[in-house]
Image (cartoon, rainbow, N blue to C red):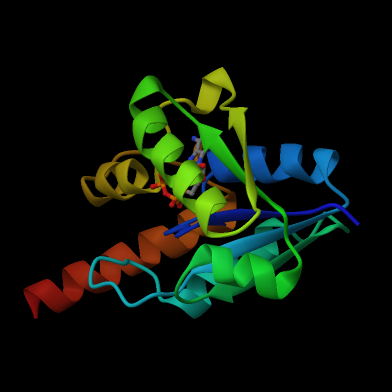
Length: 165
Ligand code: ADP
């Protein structure tokens, strides 16, 4: 069984992530979307919320499952019998860091990293940018699934209300 991980923080999942997961699911027998749940102050959504949204987004694939991981990705891969990590490359600026990370990961275990070039329509898309645009009232409905857009709008409204209160 050829099993791969698609790792990330997915805060929140975007159409760019779904594109990479879709393509990975065609290349491998099984894909595990690995959601980093390490504590970080800068998350808009909790680990459970991020995992929930991904499960909904991936419900149409029968060879994709979603799981949280803590600590090293390579340890998670070893535990799960995963030998490949699939990463999307958006721009040259992604490459330096991703190459370093891929080389580090393969020196820690026998896991290979497979780079998939982003689809041109998503090359500018990152969760951080989606949050920034949505915070200032921009329309991100074409960049994330509809249910994610709703949760994003609701969360930003909650934060605004808390800030005003
Ligand atoms: P962000 O989306 O903010 O970069 P993530 O850590 O959630 O952060 O992204 C996880 C991984 O998903 C990235 O390392 C990258 O491999 C892939 N990815 C994210 N956005 C895109 C995109 N627009 N096109 C291709 N791959 C992407």
